[in-house]
Image 1 (cartoon, rainbow, N blue to C red):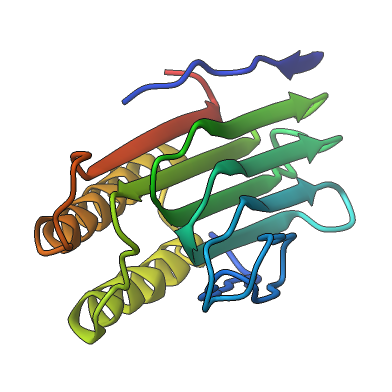
Image 2: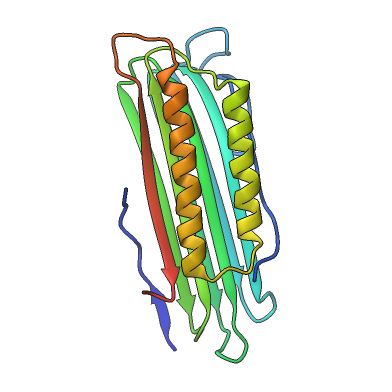
Length: 224
């Protein structure tokens, strides 16, 4: 079977582990790039953050599965650039010697103030390269929470998000077929959206209406 690679448009047996949870106030440093202009005590002029997960299954490593779950909270910003990416590749295996590659990335970013410039990029791509019968899944879920005043997720919301993270990790390491895994991961994304919507409803009010935007990209082989 030849090489297959097709980017997807946005829509509303595993092993290995790469789960990260990062809580950032403006001015803090994280695993991924985070460059606000000022410390948490003052308004930030810019926030830049990038998260990514990449897996590559092949004849030497038949099963590759990783997931990332990051929470990044910024205060007032004038400009923000946030990027979330998941890429999964299966290469060089066969029907009798199948590969399985799974990459899942959940990114939550909170920003406040009158953001004049916001660039949000969410990318997902799964590719089977000369890999008959292989299963490959890449999912990127990006949640951008925008509020008039700085939003700090309370202990209850954090506990709920921690629960989702643990279940995402279990799903990543599970033996579910890729199609069933997609459905269950989508359900977790729905839970996250609900948690954030509830947090926004309790956020300090202002002139601008608070908002939660979900960017979802999901790509996988085999196609159905």
